[in-house]
Every structure is written in C-alpha cells, then in structure tokens.
Length: 96
Length: 491
Image 1 (cartoon, one colour):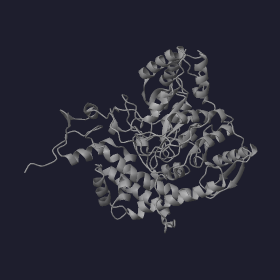
Image 2 (tube, one colour):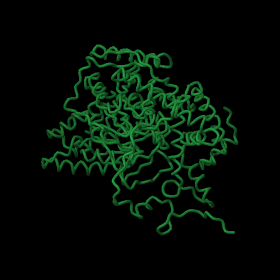
Image 3 (spheres, one colour):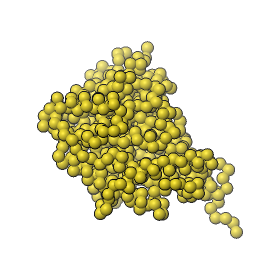
Image 4 (cartoon, chains in turn blue, red):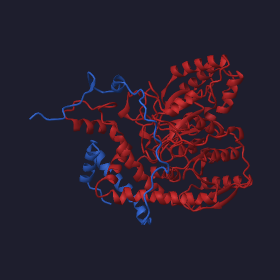
C-alpha cells in the first residue's frame, strides 16, 4: 500500500502530532512497511466470524457508593501551567 | 556480610530466621545498584530513601514478632509505567518528565501490603512500545549477560534488575510479550496472567484489551509468590475479575506423569534460530523424561497473530495516548499561541519515534475508509486465533512453545527496521490476543552464554498450573547469576 506524504500529514493532524519533515518522510516509509506486513491477514478467511471481545466476563461493577476522590490541589499538582484553581491554556476562541 | 540470598523464598526465610536484617540487606541492594546501574541502566529512578525507611519500619515490626506477610522485606522493582505516588513515573517518555503520580497502582499497594520494599522504578521502551528497551527516551538498558546486547523489552529494566540481582523480583507489563520476551533474554521466569487477574489501576494504559501486569523473578515459586500478592479483583478496575484462584504454594510440587503438553510444530519450521531449536527440542525431551506426553497441536499462524496485534495494539494506543496533550500534566511546548498548536507541538516534542510511529499507524487503521479493512478484520482474526487456541487446549493441558525466535540481539541491530523489531514478539502475542495466561522460563544458554527461554500457554485460570510445570522443569533452581556481576558485595 502506497502511503502519500499528504496521507501522513493528514494522520498527523488527526493525531495532533507535529512532525519534522525528516520524521514525516521516515514515518511514511515505516507505515508502508508495516502495512505491507499486515497484508498477511488478507489471506485469512474471516467470513461469518464475529469480532471477539477482550474478555468473556461481564465487567464487574462496584457498589454505587460515595468515596473520597482526588482533591482539586492533587488534580492540579502536575499542571504545567495554572491560574488559580484552573488549568491554563492558550486562547481557544478567537476575538472577533 | 554474607552473600545475599538469590531468591525471594530464600530471602524471606533468612528474614524470618533473623539471618539477615532488612536495613543491611537493603543497603546491599542499593550498593549493588550504585555499582552496576550506570552500566546496565535497569533503573530510571532509585527510591533509596523510601526503601531505607520501609526497611527500618518492617524490621521494627519483625523485631516485635509481627510477620509482615509472604513478601516480608523483599526488594522489588517496579516498571516505570506503573504509578507509585510521590515518585517520578515517566513511562520512559519525555512527555512525562517530572510527572509525580498522586496515587499508587493497586498491584504495588498489594505487594507492599504483603511486606515488599519498592526499591526503584525500572527502564522500559517508551510507553512499553518496543522489544529492546532502546526506545527509552532516557537511556537504553543493557543485558546483564552481555552488555553489548539488549535485555529485551518492553520490561527490559525489570528483567535486567532481577537478572543482575539488583532486586529479587519485579513488576512488568505485558501487552504483546513484554514480560516474557525480556525474561527469556535475561534467564528469568515471568508470568503474563489471565486478562483481568491483576488490577491495572495505576498502570499507564497502552492497549487496554491486551495489557496485563505480571511478575518477573528468578524462579517459578518466586513468581507465584508475587502473583498471589498482586492478583484479585479491585473496585478501581472494572476489568479485574473475582473468582481467580490464588496459587497453593503448600502443594506446589507436581508429578508430570499424565500431563499432556501440546507443541505447535508449525511454529518451529522457519524463522527460529537453530540454537533455540536445539535447546527447545532438549527441553521437550526433558518434559517427556519427567513423565509428560507431548503431541503436536495446531494454533493460528504466528504471523496472523502478530499482524492482528500490530493493528489492534496500536489502534488502542492511539486512543489511550490522546490524553497526553500538555494541558493537565507532562511536557508542554512553550511560546504557543493557539490551543491546537499546544497539542501538536507538546506531543511532537514529547513523544519519541516509536510512539509516533504507533500513534500514526493506530490512527490510520481507525480512520474512515480503512477501519473495516484493518481494525475490524484484525478483530475477526483475533476471534479465530482464540478459537484455535481454546480448541487445542481441549486436547492438551498446556502448550509448550519457544519464547522468542532469536536470542538477545545487539544494540542497534533492529532499530531502523520496525517490522524486524516487531518480529521479536512473534511467539508471545498469542497470549495477549487470547487473554489467556502464559509463562516464560529459562531452558538453557547458547554457546555464547545468552539465556534462552520457552513458554507455556494455558487455559483460563491456569497460572498456578503453568508455574508448577516450570517449577518441576527447573527443579526449582534459578539460572546462575552472570559471572561478571556475581561480585559487587559491599566491603
């Protein structure tokens, strides 16, 4: 499968990943190699086979009871930047 | 001071009898780490002060006659993608440089509750993505048996720490073979438990339908001790399951007469290193001489499993790693004007090459137009892999297979070829796709002195059975410590 530079750029945008030009070229080649390898699956008959979940068991639900959680200070403890009790980020909405 | 016991079992016996005292023992381990870690690179963060404090507290309890538990005073290492509150947890990624978790993983809490002392956080391939530890953003780990070679990955630091006797046991994580392949490269026993047997609360997620936390140790008995400590349901992890049996260590010995082992003979035909093939045949013969019967079984082609794994694991990784965005924790790009730029630049700067490769691949197989051909197809192949596996285990009690196609390779050897690196997991991924338990264990060394491992795959809940088979096979003995590291006792 041919992976175009435009496809790599589009995937990088979907994944919110900035790539240097040399990185993007390398990744283009790598993706082609990996997608070539996984072509082995084309030869596996899967008609009528249902996709399988990771576990046969139903998820165990815990009792619905209030318990102590994370405090605001703890939640903010690793923030790269904060303003008071908020995570700080660059502007999201442009001024008109 | 006398030589340190080389197994958890011997260590706890010596602690119980008073033959060793914990503060001195922990000093010995910290001394060995200071001596060898600069070369081996097993630890990213050594928890010296915390370990000393724990040793003092535990020794005081022992002196009062209060037995802390089955892991009394055992120095353990924890892979650095598992959170320990108050200590750096980076997953060997720049994107988490300086990150300090605010809670501790359940598996770690439980080891501590059983008396273990966490001595440090071990190196790994960034976010557990890799098979050599060369994708650590900080430094590679080297194989204690030959420092020119890799320890395997992604739990390479955990394996190297135990193999070099810098700790007695370790926690690793296994998404496609990441405790078993390094255990094979470093001469250890490692268990990938049944999916859901061990809580993943506090684990930095990679592939959520595949990830398992598992122990690495020098013997099957030690692995069983660690597994018993960490296994069991946890209200903080909805995928953890009740009703998983703990291993009865009082009746750990096993008679192999009548035990039926299946060998997927088609796996051995091509691509297996000749020395591994020879050692594997000798191991099969040993199982037979101990009374087991061996018969061929048919499993799915390992290449199918590996291809399905490459799609599914990376699809899940691309979703799981979306949380690293530079907003709430971790690396944040500077001089950024817009939020979208904050995301793309923080992630572009913070993630290393293998993680970027996998995020892009995962994004691709989940993207519109390709989802059905790749992701959905891989899910159906996964169902076939599991069906063939469960069918084979209706006719045998366990499946014996090589752990890896090659011995530990040289640093740099596979770094530029992602597919050849992925092939390291050829024989291990089946256990993750099926969710069933598997154990890797040493079966000997190559002529060059590199450890070689085999695997046993089992039915749901067979962790204890598999470890008992290994216990019998190895006669309970660990592989000898690499000669070059045997010295290093504190003067």
